[in-house]
Amino acid sequence: MTYCVRRLSTLLLNFKPSQSIPALRKYSSVSEDKLLYFAFRGRGEPIRIIYALAQVPLKDERVPISLDHWMNIKKDQPLGQLPVLTCSEGTLVQSKSIARYAAKKFGLAGKSIWEEALSDMIIETCDCSFGEIGAKIVPWKYLKSEPKPANHEQVLADVKEKIIQTIEFIQKGAEERGKRFIISDEISLGDVMFYSSLEVAAAVYPDLMKYNSWVEDFVLNFISDDRISKYLASRPQSQLPI
Image (cartoon, rainbow, N blue to C red; front, side, top):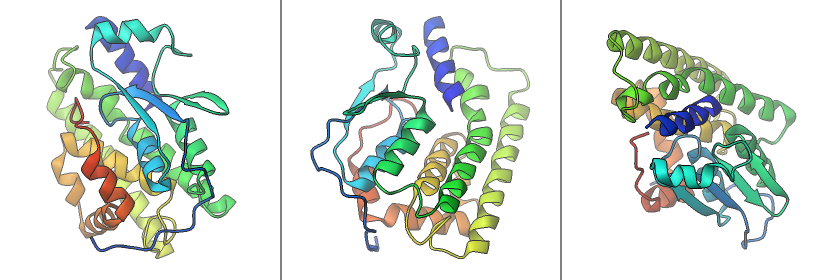
């Protein structure tokens, strides 16, 4: 959704069962990492969830959906867009780059090159389908910065069809691998990206979280993780449903 965040910036201008916790790469419990992103889930949420899984503190700075506030800080951002991650190594932009960096840093990117490649495939596939919500629906449905298109029902149907194709593609691969989660028996980056995408989509298409029994089982397994359930229960309310 890099396009979507860039798009949002432009629009603003115009406007449990417990499961065992896998061994994570050792990392200090004292973190200087700071995420700057808008006060909704969107492209920032996978990054926040990764830090929650790693049980590493993250300074989660949420920017209000306000033209005045955004204009005050936009000029200070490396590419004039969000998210931005600041850490001891430096500054990172682009949501997928940040998510990959954090996942690798905390041992959540996969246990092999193949597992990392599978995660990357899921990330890019989700971006090409779920990402269309931000490009084609959010501007008129939530930001009210564009008029509702005359063919809005067709737009909604077309985007949903593309998302369903993605869900079924990811499901097929997961079933062939036969693991607890999409790629392995432990939560990894691909699972985080898929769950986050489902959450965004559910704001527009509530039935997708229960699209079929496989999706229901995946969601239940994911949110039953103690680290995830704790984060979901304590996260701030999103200013937008996405």
